[in-house]
Image 1 (tube, protein in one colour):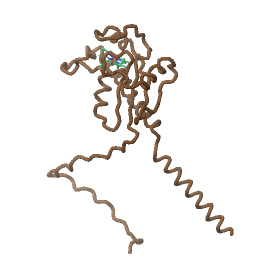
Image 2: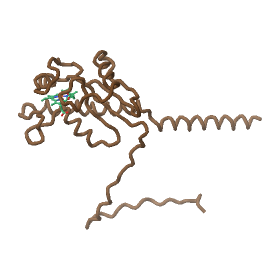
Image 3: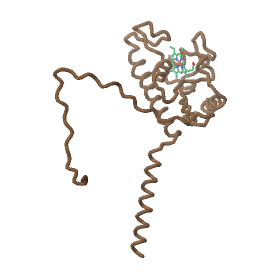
Image 4: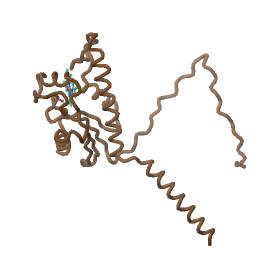
Length: 212
Ligand code: HEC
């Protein structure tokens, strides 16, 4: 009787352990989207504070037509869009209710609503929601430095000219397909062996007494 009790207890512990393992192996869309936004925001902020601001005194500046000018840097929004263009598994973008570039308009009513909520309540920081077959997260894009505001207010294509520093100027958006499979890791072809390459270290061999 007692043995059975012990076996049952062992089974319960084992299932609990396996169950918790499975939960951890499947992070939610919510969490994943927040991680992605966090990383994109960090890279963008580092670009603004440590590249754009840092190189100002040396005469470098951001320009919309940076690509044809070796002494110009991409705008923060262009930097994000360039990097995002290389990501195929999820979509990352910048949107605004009053965009300089019409292609940065929100795509759906739910995205418009998310931007309105972020403007109304700055303390929210991030809004997440299901939108059709996609899961989306939008985080507030703040006017971190004076130059954000100056450039947007003076831009010939601006549709709003009264931004102030620390305003919510728009949002970073991540759009994830809910039925997508995680991307398989694509390995490039094996490089050619080079003359004079050191011998590869051979993996250690083990005794395998359990194999007959
Ligand atoms: C020198 C001008 C300039 C500066 C500085 C600048 N921007 Fe922009 N920003 C633009 C232009 C131009 C676009 C449109 C880029 C595109 O998508 O082609 C844009 C796009 C955006 C967008 C997407 C919506 C839209 O208006 O098209 C947001 C949000 C944004 N910028 C926020 C910021 C923030 C925040 C900063 C400061 C950290 C900043 N910008 C600095 C010129 C500027």
